[in-house]
Figure: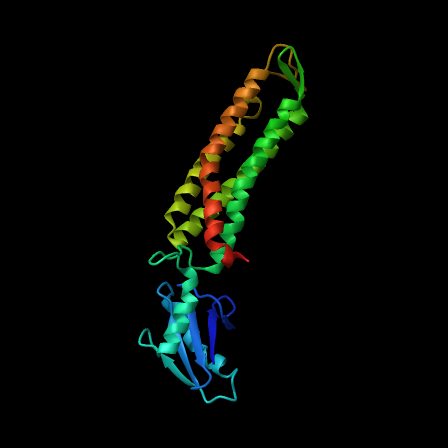
Amino acid sequence: MLKTFIYDESKSHWIEEEHRLLSHDICAILDEEKEIIYLWSGPKSKKGKFRKAYSQVKELISSFPQLNIQFVMTKKNFPREIQTKLESLLESIKLGKNKVLKFSRFITIRIYTITIIATVILPILSFLNLSLSLGWSVSNGTYQVNNIMYDNWINNSKIFTIITLILFSINIIIGIVENEHQVIMFSLNGLIISIGLLLYLNQGTFLFLFQEGWTLTNYLILQKDIFIFLVLILTAILIFEIPNIYKLISFFKTYRKFIF
């Protein structure tokens, strides 16, 4: 019987894994019948990680005191049954005959899942918050709003935008780590536009030309100015939102079995 283990560098520990293998992994395959353990390193695995895994093979062997295990380290020419097992585990990262998954780490897959969902949802929440202006008191084509409500209205969307900006920065780092150009491009687009939106919202009371009769505590804003403002915000959001929604859908279809 064959047992497979993956080296978890963060915990400095070998973990049994029977279903999937990624290209950055270090894998140990134990042939219990022949009492031999084989060590395999993925094409994207780092030398430092391999050295750590190698140094802890004895710890893995000690988990089977009933066996007199021999250790074999090789990059190729595994016995047929070992090679078949490796191919079976690696099959999970293939998307067809020659195409292989871009992401090679469980941690980046799961972090990116969270961040891309957030970068899709937060801009929507920001726009919905700004759309609350359509419910302000209106008279003769002019919206009336007090200064506290106005400041909260702007500040809430600024907070959503700042968080979105931070998450896009994280996504760029993930894209660089995984060498995923589409993630880098879409996230950079979102980052630049989010910075622009933040600078725009940061104008506060200078976003609009208040109408005659306004006071320091009661602002008067033309309806058409609010409409134009919302259209500009929506257009800017859609420029990065549509590509990221597409990426979210395609990412989930591709990596859903690695997420949960």
